[in-house]
Amino acid sequence: MKRFLLFLSLILCAQALASDPAADATAKFLAGLPVRGTALESHSTDSGWATHATDLDRAWERLEKQQLSKIRAWAPQSLSPSYEDAGPMFYMFSGPDFLYANAFFPNASTYILCGIEPVGPVPDIDKIPRAILPSALANLRRSLDSVLSWSFFITKNMKVDLRQMQLSGTLPVLYVFLARAGCTIDSVTPVALDRSGNFVPEGKGTTPGVRIVFIGPNGREQTLYYFTSDLADWAGKANPGFGKFCEQQGDGVTLLKAASYLMHSNNFSQVRGFLLAHSKLILQDDSGIPFRFFDPQKWDIRLYGRYHGPINRFKEYPQPDLARTDADSKPALLEFSFGYQWQPSRSSLMVATRK
Image (cartoon, rainbow, N blue to C red; front, side, top):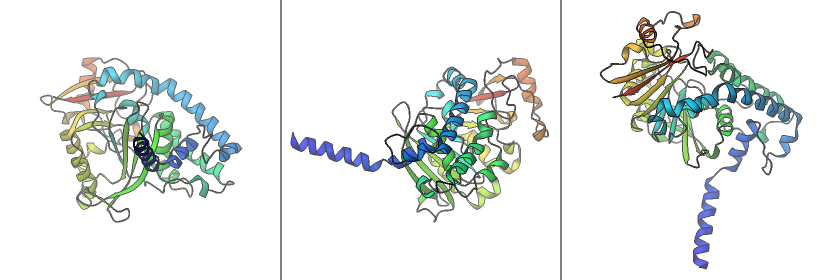
């Protein structure tokens, strides 16, 4: 019996050492959630953090009512059986948007996000002077404004917001989304890929990234990767590491939202071809893969919402074939916003399921 208890104790100690309570506490702190009983409890007594927590509570209450609760009601029925798929989930041109990746596909075993925004250093609250911390938290809230208000990040704003001296890069945003999604962070590891898509020591690869292992609300261990990589064809040829890594993951489900119509151009044919070849299901707005690339012999298409065409910023990317199909099928309106047409009455999305 003593030997069994000793063995059990060793297992529990190993598990404790494998986890990173500091990372989880930091995520909850940045998300404005209680951190009682952690090393950051004293920081939560500052008025700057109290303001941060109150503002985020208010924003998430609105977001939950207008978006997340409606997505959680819509996704199981509209995406089944892919909603239950425990394989990889690809989200290209995502930036740090774990928020919507997890809302639509909460059961994925591995989330693979990619953007041009830098990962940044692992946040360390103790290294930020107390006098500067309120402004650092305020800047973090500013970086969240667009995705919380309109469901997507504005890339040019992100370039400014994520390059601040404190809490820089995508990691602080990913921390906020993980904590607010009810996830517990187990470990955070900076990673890098070589040209073959294999992991190499940080700083020695051509594609920087981060691996976050977490426990979701369902109690399962899940993994989130974010990589900084340009997905243009010329960039992929010069630095194929991220594409090779994705190929190694096998087939999965895909989310594309507010993707700047990049795959409407032949300059992004490789990532477009990869997603068409390796996706069991693609959930996207009209800024993703053009409608004409979905061969009806290979894909079942379901439309939701109303297609009103691109916003003025992207008016050169109309899709007459999508407009005709949308008009003929008269799909039901969405109750949540999605993509650049951020009003629910003008939002549309497409669910393409591979036959």
